[in-house]
Length: 218
Length: 218
DNA sequence: ACAAATATTTAGTTTTGTCTAAATTTTAAT
DNA sequence: ATTAAAATTTAGACAAAACTAAATATTTGT
Ligand SMILES: [Mn+2]
Ligand SMILES: [Mn+2]
Ligand SMILES: [Mn+2]
Ligand SMILES: [Mn+2]
Image 1 (cartoon, helix red, strand yellow):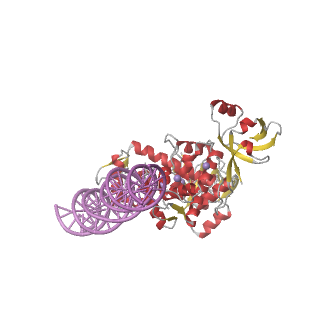
Image 2 (cartoon, protein in one colour):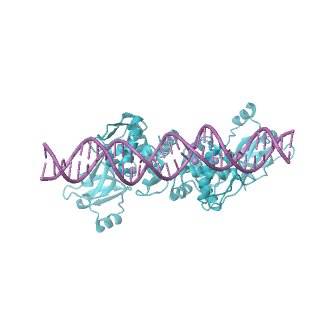
Image 3 (cartoon, rainbow over the protein chains, first blue to last red):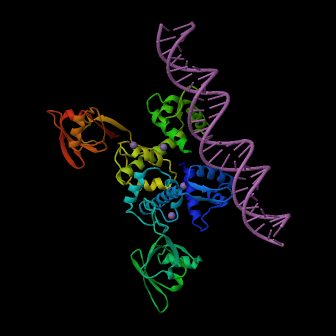
């Protein structure tokens, strides 16, 4: 597998999750930042190699073999992201570009030992699940913080309200994207929440909670 | 710089240290495991880019700019080797192939933070010096253990006698390639040595010491 | 149902890095 | 000083991955 083939396979995997299953040439071209004609050429090659199922004008889906490859690349990508954040002090939003390169390094032992070195993480810094060696992983869902049941834990992955006052509030309360948040308790009276973030308990209003997105595993 | 260009530059750097300075087309071809005609093509391109000095039939040398690039690749290669051994439990002889890939990852921050994560190592697992960010590094020399002055430290990089009995002896005494060895003292009488290896003091005969190579910095 | 718009594929080039075979230059041997 | 051997370069070709422009196929709007 060349680097380029791997990127195509990974993109087809990500796009293929948008229901319908079959992925269009143009959508791949957009994600790859290339031209549709180049995509057609590559799809033909991937099809000949048995990585995708393809019928002219009908879009493309991953074969079983292609899915296996896709998952192994996603696994590597997310493990490297964890490494960059946990070990090299990268922040949440700096890791993607580098992981995009590191995911192509070929060495089974490297991936295994990296996994071990990181303590077999289940999710990456963006809250996305990391496939196991044989391609299994738990689904994750994105929910507003105020809709998360008590006792659940998730990673802060986005805001609904992105106005400066709200962002400033988050900053002042030391809540940042990428933080792990545990829902400790919810007040019946006003819907406000007790949450635990970086081992510190804080209390936030329903208004705040309804503007923060959490990604939850399972 | 493409991956291939970087490999050529690195090889020209390594071959260029064998006196004479100028590197032959055939020697590059041998190291790259490619044909001399392919080397000529690449040399022309590198020459146009100002990375090497080249005159037809006269061999090639790195330009100042080319040397800078070469040192940055060597730096990355050796830092990754340290990472693999120190953090991922790779052994001495398993790291090269993987480092050969990792050295091409492009991210200044990655290299800086990796360096920090590793505690700013000065030498790689093979005892070779790691260039600093601005390309400086100490020279290293390979010497027989019995010729190393008292108080010096080095990394065990090879054997002169590779017969099974000798290798078995090393194994039994827990001396392995890649180990750091400190010369504690030398007995005048028989030339035997007191050395420290993995914090353990051991006593070895001159005969042993004259069959082990150490790589010493500076 | 049909024309217009959109999506996709084909045809023909380009760039990068490689190859083989042939030509040229340098080096080594008599 | 020639000649033979070895090293190097040139010429011509190929595969991978991209592009542009043109040709088809599919969808959509009326
Ligand atoms: Mn990638
Ligand atoms: Mn991620
Ligand atoms: Mn390399
Ligand atoms: Mn090394």
